[in-house]
Length: 69
Image 1: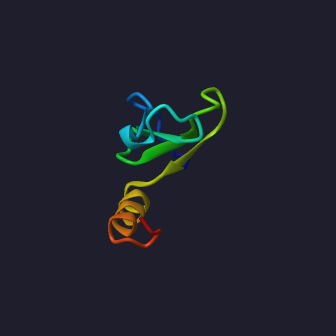
Image 2: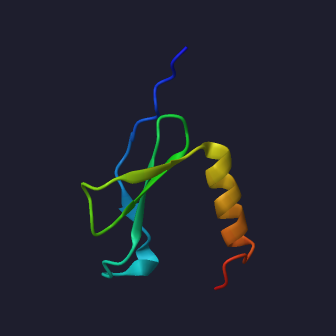
């Protein structure tokens, strides 16, 4: 049995807090509810896929201060 990889279903966006900086990551929604992340300097380059539970765990840890301020 083969399952298709989720596809990007929305635009990649950069955090507004990053301003005009180019050394950022961009995030886009995936068809399975997860997120894709790519380097803002390389729009045609590879991107990482995160399942919904993985993305939720990451964002919860960021909100909880796990990575500093």
